[in-house]
Amino acid sequence: MRRNRRVKILATLGPASSSEEMIRKLHEAGADVFRINMSHADHDLMRALVGRIRKVEGDVGRPIGILADLQGPKLRVGKFAEGKVALTLGQTFTLDDNPEPGDANRVQLPHPEILEAVEVGHRLLIDDGRLQLECVATDSHHIECKVVAGDKISDRKGVSLPDTTLATGALTDKDRKDLDAVLAADVDWVALSFIQRPDDLAEARKIARGRAFLLSKIEKPQAVERLDEIIELSDAIMVARGDLGVELPLEAVPGIQKRITRACRKAGKPVVVATQMLESMISAPVPTRAEVSDVSIAVYEGADAIMLSAESAAGDYPVEAVATMDRIAQCVEKDPLYPGIIFAQRPEPEATGADAVSLAARQMAETLGVAAIVTYTATGTTGLRTARERPQIPIVALSPVLATARRLSLVWGLHCVVTEDAQDLDDMVNRACRIAVEQKYAKSGDRVIITAGVPLRTPGATNLLRMAYIGSDGLSAV
Image 1: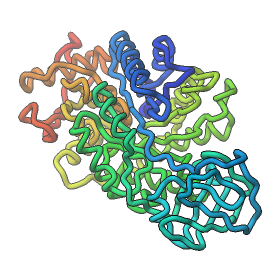
Image 2: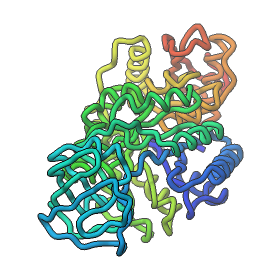
Image 3: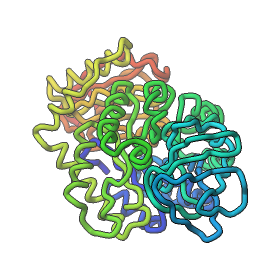
């Protein structure tokens, strides 16, 4: 199945889309990667969903990526004697370690790491910012706050800390168990929630040991401040705009999205734009015009993937949401202005052989109007560097490693094909020509650009660039 777009679509599975039939329909509608949210899926359900995705993958004959999204630390207040209380602007309200039910003056905050880290002047946002508190005094057992916005609070509402860096890491005990389970199920990507600092990736990287790629969700101000370091240590990044919009001013989020997208493109790391992209389609068969513009902006920026959350997981129109996103992306990429916008945002190549070859491949392909760039990639590095150039020529990524092809299904512009490794250079060129024809990217008489690393089967050694004509048999080079 050949997609008529370069940006990828990431669809979340849930109650509305967990059957094999629905997964197949979502893939046919345009979903390239499926997300399993471990906040809502237990291990049995996760394994069942992975099995269903792999069944669909086998039936369609195309590699499909799976992303398991770890819950991360969920910070919540305790319970109230009456379930909820009313507050007044300017009053004092205390968060403490007392397990007794709360009242209009105090409530338990069962997170000692917060009690120890919050300082005077720090903000505490309750219930997605509907209640805003400011710390006026604190010790290791109490945080005395002033109510600066909002007028009510109820049981177990979430707490956000835009000004506070917690000493604890990003992985909870639940996350560690979930990480072991998803790695055993052979998922391709693991998303880490509430990353604050580069060090937060270290434990997950040690546990994963290369069995899955790690995607860092940027949803806290502390992560934005150390963005470049986090990108360097991550395999991919997600612009998680929901929590970003809680802990940062809403008007700042669009600019941060652009900053993250361009930083990832410069680094050659995939970037996913997520949250509320087609939110109205949870209950309506068509999106709002503003949502269409939101999706379009992400595509114009050159994001690798755009994501659906509740729209495909729990909405009334999951297939229609994926199909709508697919149509929007196709329309943007056909816009005459699109190539110029993508070119204007193209980063300078790094001083490496892989970047030099990828740059030359893109320039040759666009100058000569070849049918496709065919890249051999065992670890994924060559495919990522080729995609970094955002060529207007189709990219066919050939890999002998199924796991690599699945992981690259998240990456902009890559049409991934699993094939046996080439035996020698002649076999490599002939195989590239044959597969380009089989996948309907080229025909007899066309030219293709081929990139690879030699000696063959040498990871990360992209150093070969070759142009080939496809012979009259459509199977070999001349």
